[in-house]
Image (cartoon, rainbow, N blue to C red; front, side, top):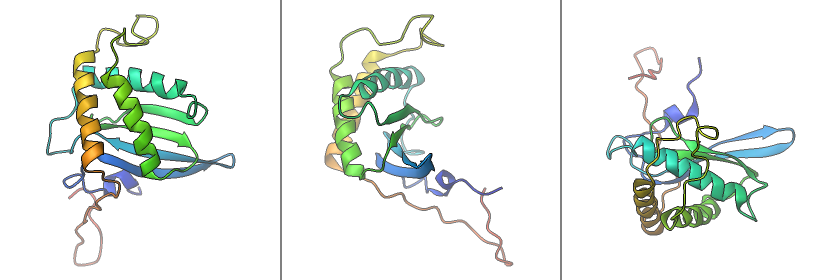
Length: 171
């Protein structure tokens, strides 16, 4: 099997920021997946699951109601490693444009003081697993990071090869 591109990123040197993970074409439209990296993988603790769940609910609600962006938002959801989220949008935009959108979305979360949207047994598969105070903390932390040291170029992982030129992907 082919190695998927995200496994070719050097996660030991990956810093918080916004990265283009991939672009795809669907029915003549460009879909761009952005890596919204909130913590440095393998260097810092992952985001707590309950906080990430709340980030998912509040930021998804914000993005899907954003007057300028709501028709372009395809998906917002957490990474399995809990170090960030993926944002899929119609079109392709420079990371700086997505940065401005994320600064707005995370400021909205940081200042959010209402009931977390979609947290009833009928609207959420794990409605008790939320942590708004910790989500707000993570939002503040990410805003600070995006404002001071913006990273948008993936570090590439070096893959070892054997004497015959075969590449090892799990080394």
